Image 1 (tube, rainbow, N blue to C red):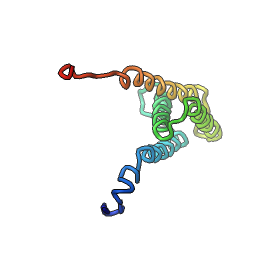
Image 2 (tube, helix red, strand yellow; image 1 turned 90 degrees about the horizontal axis):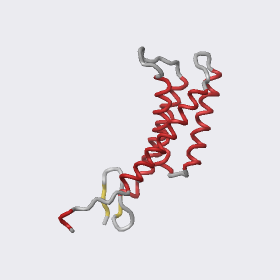
Image 3 (tube, rainbow, N blue to C red; image 1 turned 135 degrees about the horizontal axis):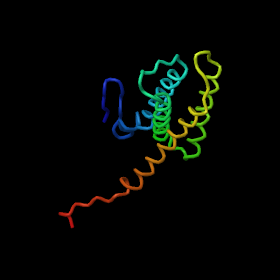
Image 4 (tube, one colour; image 1 turned 120 degrees about the vertical axis):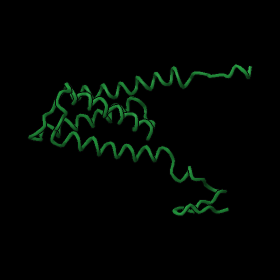
Length: 142
């Protein structure tokens, strides 16, 4: 049996729609877009809202939390592989910023990046420990 979806011809006895575009592929695309967005933000001229102290550091923590999350969902790497790769990206960011006249490198930014990665793994640990492993049973079934 052949199913036509307009863009794809899918044979139901061989593959299904989930095989054509799987979740990891979607997360890989989301990660690529996030890397482009973060790179644009950290290499462009800063224009922070007035009145929010340490907004730059909050941005670094949040960006690297999301990058960690998307990298994990896209590739499922070991924690140390993910941390080393994103730490390398964080160092790359600071090296490039040190060469830009309107930016400057900062150890505090790198630390904020590492906090974002650590925060992801802490929340992931909490999720696995308390939510994913929780066995919810229906009292009517017992």
